Length: 169
Image 1: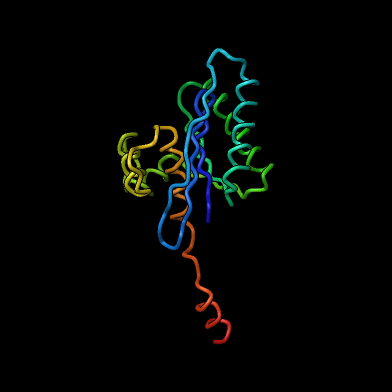
Image 2 (image 1 turned 30 degrees about the vertical axis):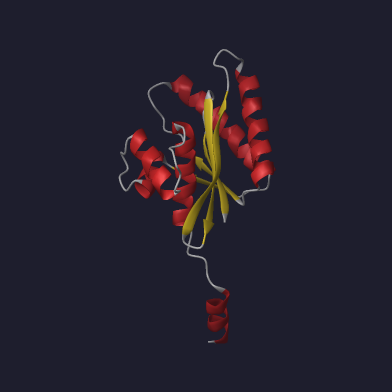
């Protein structure tokens, strides 16, 4: 199963592709889509949409996973983040991908084992779990963590022989 994890943002949107091969997780690719803070919001959202579309076309994930919004005190920031999240979901939807969502707390708990883990702890655990030589950038590491979280929540793959035994049984 190949999954794209996405950590949406209007300035930086992190993305990461992880594939499960049996009980092993493999790092395929990751990166950040960066936009200029002074650029009009519609232009920034358009760039995020087109870049994610290109990335999904290139890497052909089977599912998309998006981090849910953490609502802070700044309503304006939350609204802009909501726009970015909507663009991310629209891009995945256009590709026909099932979309799953997890909170930052769920992701940190699944990856680090502690829901209040620091950014550096996430980066290091993602590096270890995916056997990467160096940590990914923070936003990309968060996106990879979202993908890892989802893959860990999926039921184990069933072997064809166990399915045949159950059908015969």
